[in-house]
Image: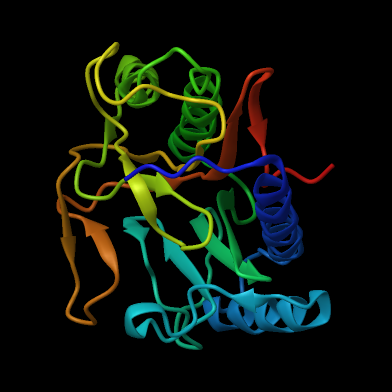
Length: 250
């Protein structure tokens, strides 16, 4: 069942989500060749403690870290490790969630370490653009898959593909709630979008095929063909005045 949040609940989600954004920003400025993905996880833990929030992913379904760090062909759920050293030109996708006072926030960014290659830059740019095109569709009166279709149309128009196996989601008192928010679909179909719905929209866009596999660690999802991948995410409230990005720093 899709839950409708009141103004107070949306504000509580917003506080949590904005802290997630602050932590991500502290990680963004760290990303450079030579640091490890574990360095990013340790920074996320420090910032979360300082800001008074619980890292939502830590221990979630057994996940062993505070942040997901996925590099190049890794799509999502990359486990931080001191053995994973970031290289020049790597696409580094970071996903971080927070829990504060019983409310969750969730956001993700992709950053290129050091000097960006042309194909890496295009993939990251198009993925972020597809997120904002999707957010524009998050208004009362539209259908859920209007959001999905917006992601798919922009990614595919630029020669990329969207991951099918992993999707966005509702969010609030739980990290994952109804509805699931795919990054592909037919416009003007799906549940009605209503004021008070809060969803995490998160395009995962691949350089080549949309097919993915999970590695032996049980978490890290990679492109089946070794192509690059990028990932962006915002927590968004649907309001009568239009989409409200809750995970955006004021």
